[in-house]
Image 1 (cartoon, rainbow, N blue to C red):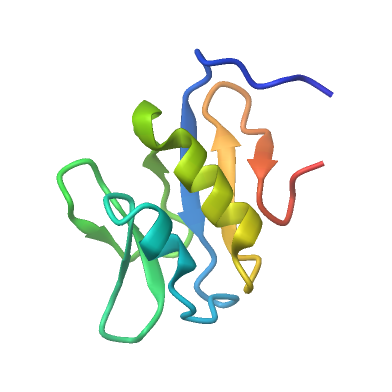
Image 2: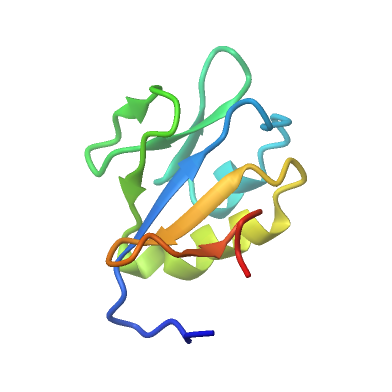
Length: 97
């Protein structure tokens, strides 16, 4: 099992089918996560635009890396997936080893 280094670029996406609308992710990283009018959480692009297509990913800003990983680990719906951009390995979320 590889250890994440500070140089790894990360991406995050949310499986809305599993989202409980609890809002922990929005509390952890409001620059990355936001609720839509349907009460579910979505990721945002770097410009703050809500990304609503299923499975769409956004880059994790390096300064918010720990907040996004914590959000994935604490999510009651187990619906946040954080993957390494380089090799698509999930490092936090339901598919993390």
